[in-house]
Amino acid sequence: MEFNNSVHPTKEQMEGFLEGDTDTPIAMVNLLKFKEKAEYEDGRDSDLTGEEAYAIYGKEVLEHLKKVGGEWSFGGSISRLMLGEVEELWDKVAIARYPSRKAMLKMVTDPDYLESNKHRVAGLAGQLNIEVKE
Image 1 (spheres, rainbow, N blue to C red):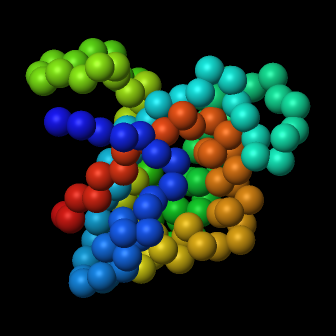
Image 2: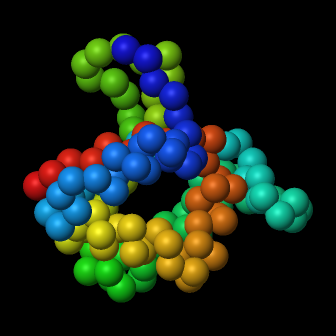
Image 3: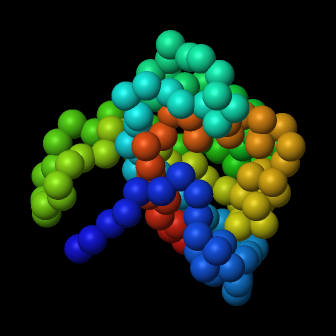
């Protein structure tokens, strides 16, 4: 199995997200890999680690989730691989629940969310988002 961490969805992934049933509740499983040092797109100097920058995003995203009826469900550090093989482990896992894809789309396009997202992008080397229908 091959995988590719990313910070933004591809055009095809976004098109697929917008197709079909957009009203069913979903959970989003996030496998997170952090940069050693946060790198902000605006070039600001930062002493934050990638994990510290992402933690700022994580704290702020709780309010963004509430605004669309979503919720943080679970999160934690990955300690080991129990089954299967990968070249390296992700650092953390986080699960968020949304009332629908429409709600998630509303959140990720909100200007307040986009302001918080700069910390996510600065901190992540990449991630996998796995949509799960409940």
